[in-house]
Amino acid sequence: MTAFLSAAVFAALACGSADNRSTDALTLEEAVGQMLMIGFRGDALDDDTAAMLRDIRPGGVVLFDRDGPSGGKMVRNITSPSQLRALTSKLQETAVIPYFIAIDAEGGYVNRLKSKYGFGVSVPSAQTLGLGFTAETAAAASELAVQLRELGINWNFAPVVDVNVDPESPAIGAFERSFSGDPAIVAEHAAAFVEAHQEQQVITALKHFPGHGSAAGDTHLGVTDVTATYRRAEELAPYRELIEGGYDGPIMTAHIVNRNLDASGRPGTLSRAVMTTLIRDEMDFEGVIISDDMQMGAIVAEYGLTEAVIEAVKAGVDMVMLANQSGEYDILNVYRVRDALLQAASDGVIPEERIYESADRILELKRQYGIR
Figure 1 (cartoon, one colour):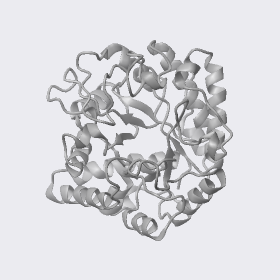
Figure 2 (cartoon, rainbow, N blue to C red):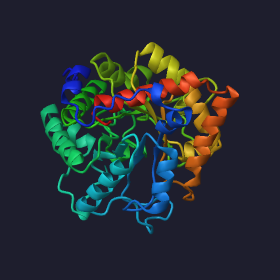
Figure 3 (cartoon, rainbow, N blue to C red):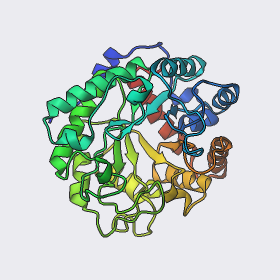
Figure 4 (cartoon, rainbow, N blue to C red):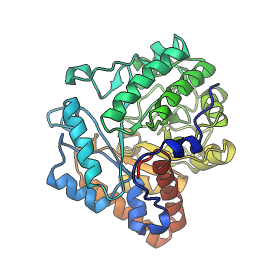
């Protein structure tokens, strides 16, 4: 397998100011802000959104081309290449601590940069890429990463490393999001995809840990239990191989229930057995763990939003995503989550050290990729 670029290489490549921030310089409120990845409406930075971002100082923002709560009637964040570049530039101009600016650009069906908006790079689905050579995957991923950097996007929520256990799985297999049913092929193509992005200083995120490929349900819609279908050795294999090969970029969680991994039936995102015991202690992963959207049906059907976020952080999640793409659009949820985390720290429910631990990982990731 191809070795990943080292932190030393990134240090040599890094661009930006000489501001070597550390969590020592952050207030608790600022540290909590770094743990939030926020979605919002609008293809330009309006006064209300700008005020919210100034107040929260999130670690990053996630951009979409279609507004979920309105069924596409309201304008979201992506309408053309020039508009998107203007938006990302304005975001960074107004940031106190520069943002992660993230997008889903897996290729195939999951791509926010569509040709109908004027974007010129078209990447095949993971399933199609997995049938070919890794060099072809690397070439496609490199072209994509160049486009992302030119647009001011520094984080791609890809590649999917779910193993295609069930080709009809409604969230993965049915949309050709898995490279293969063979874990070795998944790992090989994921490694090629990741390295091509690293060379362009675009962050990746392996997803969805600990494995979504056997799910008969869709966690966007509701609780999804894979206890009876999950294949532990196979579905963890790509993560093990990539981590052992030097991958230290982010990993995104899955909201799936797996009672063989957590007998309590908690979704993986909220499970300490999964987010700490398995991935940190057993698999020796030291990078940033980011949740899938905390407003998805698998979470809100069983938990309150603020309760779920607190449980996710207690479990070991570093960044929580609030995409504001599900249910009724309410940007005040961002404030509620921020305030709930601060209150949890004040009450001793979440030790302050736990928050600063996550903020430190997040700032280190920004430093590594020159986002500072």
